Image (cartoon, rainbow, N blue to C red; front, side, top):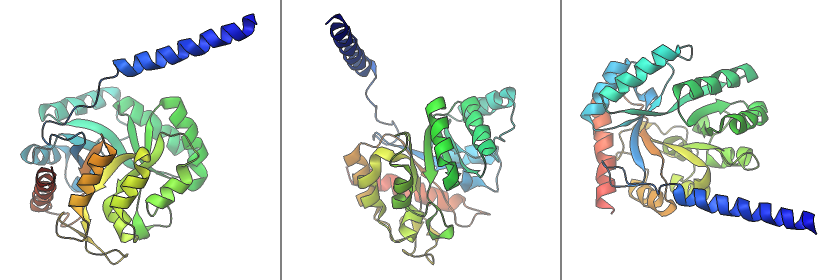
Length: 278
């Protein structure tokens, strides 16, 4: 009887603690630049041919404040002092590095290295591409580090993780912090509907890469947002419906030697859709 009473007390205390923590947790606040719960950001890969100074200058001019950090801007071997200096540079431009990646992982040593990197950088999300055989080990690391792991979709260009369905099938039985970076362009190029996939899998969507494409097959290629076939008004409405609080980061993959007009056009169009669908 005493044992049962003790278990009841422990259970009640656990429930009360849960609700107390839930009440202390502040409700998500709209991003000031959009008035939405979701934020507009930039995927670092957009600037694969440019240094961090040009990246931040472009982000400042387009009023974008969130960066998914690529390792060519902040190498994995960076010291703690170099990481601190990198964050200080971002702060000068009012930019927050919210995630790292995409990072490609082929061995357990890669997984160890990149989780340590994310921890030292101080982000809560890794955008990664692990081999299928590494998923149990990644799951273990997610539990250890408490970091969201967003698997990047790649459409028909590679054999693994081609669309949202593929990521869901591989992660649905793993830690709930394992999910996807929903790349709307690659999802579309694999014949899928990113609006439907966001509605279906939103609990496992930890990052979003925004781009537009010309077709729903491998032959479809990247264009400025608004010039392709993706229904962005419907996508923005879906973001609101599911209460997405993460970042929608532009991953511009056209005219990579001189992407700046395309970046401005894409960000402007996406913000215009946000404004006109309210």
